[in-house]
Length: 112
View 1 (spheres, rainbow, N blue to C red):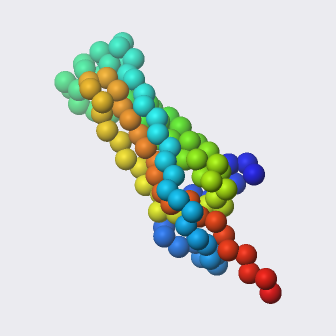
View 2: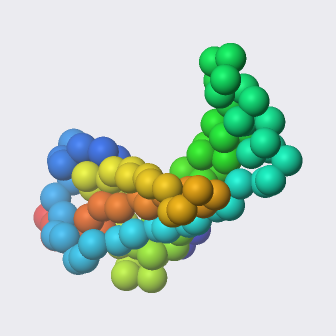
């Protein structure tokens, strides 16, 4: 199964599906800031406005965390991940960590 086919949802329920929870899954990435971009961001923070290099770094970090979350779910044989959340934080002055986490689930097949 391609891990892109694993449904990831922020909700607790998947309409029309019954499932069992098979475990928690995480996708974590830590990115460091480029010194030159960091210097430019420092200047930008003095005048205000969006710091696009940081925004881009966080967007890329969230994408990478989601890829790793799906890989983790696939290793457990999951069909989906429910209750997915993101969390992020700084590590020191020059690194940002992002985690995507949720509950991996396996669909229950009904013989009719």
